[in-house]
Amino acid sequence: MTTNTDVRLIEVPKIQDRRGNLSVIEGATIPFISKRVYYLYDVPSGSKRGGHAHKEQQEFLIALSGSFDVILKDGKSSQTVTLNKPNLGLLIVDGIWRELRNFSSGAVCLVLASDEFDEEDYIREYKNFKLFKNR
Image (tube, rainbow, N blue to C red; front, side, top):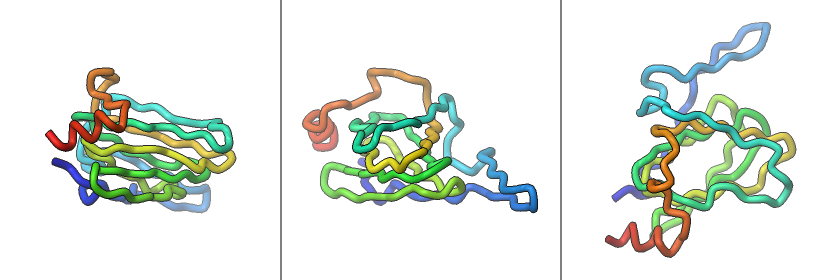
């Protein structure tokens, strides 16, 4: 069973020159081949996103612009990670509840997912997540 200790920050390679920075996610940057990419933006002040876990899917979150907090729960402990650098991403493994909060103005959250959308992989109620973790 996965825990919050399995979640980790991964630095994305950054190429700097006088024209600006470029970061690339390829090969072994993340431990899965991305099969879906989506992004969150124009999140109203005070709004929350996430509020679910995945049974099998992994996700890699990056704050491309601005900042936001990711609250992670493994059924026993909770931790908060603030993402605010476009070359630092958060790998969220399967079986971890996540909530995204405190979006700054202009924040953009990029998500690379290990699989295509499958509603059956989602756990959307926290009580069901607790049952899933205690099976």
